Amino acid sequence: MADTVERIIITGLSGTGKSTVARLLARRLGWDWVDTDAMVEATTGASVADVFASQGEPAFRELEAAALTEALGPTRRVVATGGGAVLRNDNRRSMAEAGFVACLQASTARVEARTAPRDRRAVRPLLSRPGDVARLKAERAALYDRADWTVHTDRLSVEAVAQEVVRAWRQTSGKAQAIATPFEGAPELAATVEASSGSCPLLVGWGLIRRLGELLRQAQINGPVYVIADSNVSGKYMRTVQRSLQELDIEPHTFTFPAGEPSKSLEMATRLYGWLVQRKAQRGHTLVALGGGVTGDLTGFVAATYNRGMGFVQVPTSMAAMMDASIGGKTAVNLPEAKNLVGAFYQPRLVVADVSALETLPHRETMEGWAEAIKHGLILDAGLFKTFEEEADLLLALEPELTTSVIRRSMAIKARVVSEDERETTGYRTLLNYGHTIGHGLEAATEYGKFMHGEGVAVGMMGAARIGVEMGITPRDVLKRQEAVLRRFDLPVSCPGVDLERVEAAMALDKKAEGTSMRWVLLEDVGRAVVRRDVPQDLVRQVLRELAG
Image (tube, rainbow, N blue to C red; front, side, top):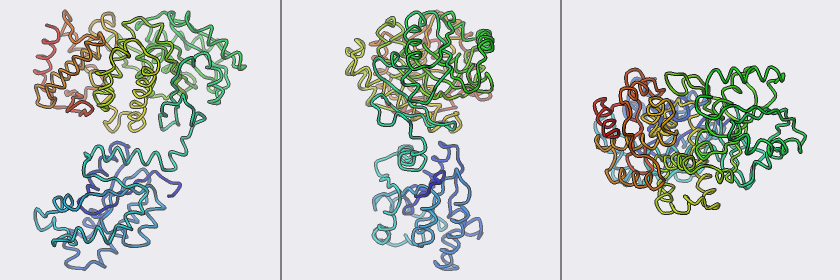
């Protein structure tokens, strides 16, 4: 395979879904896509069947080769090829040199069903007679086997096929090699976020705060560093962090701010800017966010904007921050009107999650953190959700091995989503907003004083599930299973007494709104979520009344 891998080429017989998968891949990666058969049709003004009939197969293969050469020119592109493009040596060579080649395979019966002509223009010239599919599969098997990766599609949804192609591309291509980190193979490495600005290793384990200096050195962060924490976390860990840094000759500076959501503001960011000016902080220095989501968001926002960008490391000490807020590069501060309205996408260089820190958290903070992991299971990992159903007692007791395993798994899920849709351009990352549409509205409407973030998300998930049931999207059993798990983890499933007008007003300001419509993440099943923009506002109001009743 070539060093240039920002192209994915899809091969396989007609009827295996090449064009549909190419379109979805391009949307998820933020690339463009082309179909070489469509290019030939655009050039000739005739269907592929008509070109075969009027000019013959040799002429079509010349047109196909020219289209393929043109298609492989730009980078950041997905190319769906015709089924016979692999027949020519020069085509195979140019595809192999241009990027990552994935072959889609399907059973003979499935291909026959998919290629049955609906009208004359839809006839596949080489698949028009009984037995043609089996014959072509046998004739071309060795050529298709030369692909970098093969996906058998019969039992997979289009989304699952696209996900497997992206996973294989990242794993086997030069991009995967380029993002290798100093922690490759380390037992603490849970996943790596692959971002446009570089890679961000996610480290998970017990006692990592005591090793922070060592881990920063390993990540080639040499200091000075500016450690920022709220008043609760600072008293618990700041001395430990300072000693760890000083032992490795990393110069530490520390800043403590009042704990609580009100500190996530432009006013506090301005105070931090002034503090950094006093210490002559430079672009090459690093800010370390030590604490929960408020600390991470505030510190990340300052890191993104001071000196046009400084180094940034996340050391989350809360459950919610470990599994959600510290991963993905979303940084922001609040305005009085709504949460997170001023911010930037800015990836940290490293995330260090010390699971032992959870032992010092109040019960309520631990439970609100579990809400994010439960959400990850509901939207993308049915097995993870089943763990919450079957192992609740051990997780509630923070049994070290299982807790660490679940946190690693949850962090890896978010890392995968962020890597594939860093800036929410393809829609895939929107799935992470399950429960957030109502949840953020509840937080803002109650001035961030009644609901912790995970609690608002829990109520929001119940609202989204009810909407899904009413629209015929979510099975009622899924709603019941979700409610049972949320209750088991002491999370709220309703919001009695809230001002619904204020909730609706806050929801209208949420970043998930597009014009007059709202993007809603709904469940088709446990582990399978979809984004919808057709939820009636009357249904939203009905569900809000039910939650508040």
